[in-house]
Picture (tube, each protein chain N blue to C red):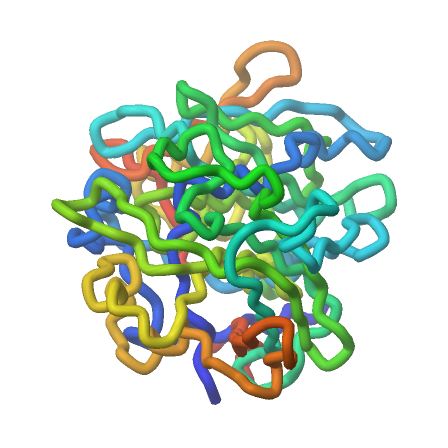
Length: 173
Length: 233
């Protein structure tokens, strides 16, 4: 077995790849409850990371000609990323469990040698109380770092703190 | 419902830590808490698909404007496999890099070296059925960066890979053999395992080299493979 190739930072110039339309996962005409997921990426001093690449993946709705499932957003001068998508449904967990609706996020940036993976759940979902991942995070304050909160019409906010007192829970996937 | 087969955990030392203080940018951006362990679910074992019909390949970065870019033309080719040596077919590869003078065509790059109007520095290719890919570009120049006094990045090309799942995402950099700057580069040296680190250096390859046209370099990449034993996490 040959181990996977080593990661290197995405650096500050990844925007050469960027197609800003990728941040809108509804652009191909998917039907569903349209939402915005947004938030700031902040460093250990609480300063915005304005050069990050935030990627998202949701496995439901299932990928089709009308729904890519995957999105990529830059962060602006305030460190803010922003996706438009449709609200994900619940999906199966391991061993006949159910996972609460969630969006997987991967943060790539200068200063990160590898992507950091986390998830955005949605405040108020009944299934949050029985979601296997959320239940596995003992401290309520840590668990809360993965829960997006309402921030206006059809808008959900989840800030991502890379380091510090309210550091986001990052996942070892 | 059958549980999805997870991908293998990373082999110790083969991936860089988040806390790599010689690379100053990591100091305020690495998490201090341990990553939270979790078994792979459908969210991690599935991922986006990109097709060449949706995302047209750009495999000749030397002629992106129709006119030749300045610098030394090179051919980069290789194979993408998983950890069991199986080819990863039809997967998208994104490529970006500085021009021959060491300058990115990017608003944030203020390095005092000339831009080349005929070199944009972004490409996209797909692997074939056997996991092979190939593209043409210009050998990128070295450039200074503010990490420490007299810090210079070695010549490198950035790569982004998706593979079959969210868990197989990989972003890395390819380096060139014999580059004296590698010895001083904290990003390259953040990979603890020497063998894993040196796999980021492409190999000069006379079979990829085309007579009277361009030197060829081989850069083979391995993406995570499936774990043989479910729940192996």
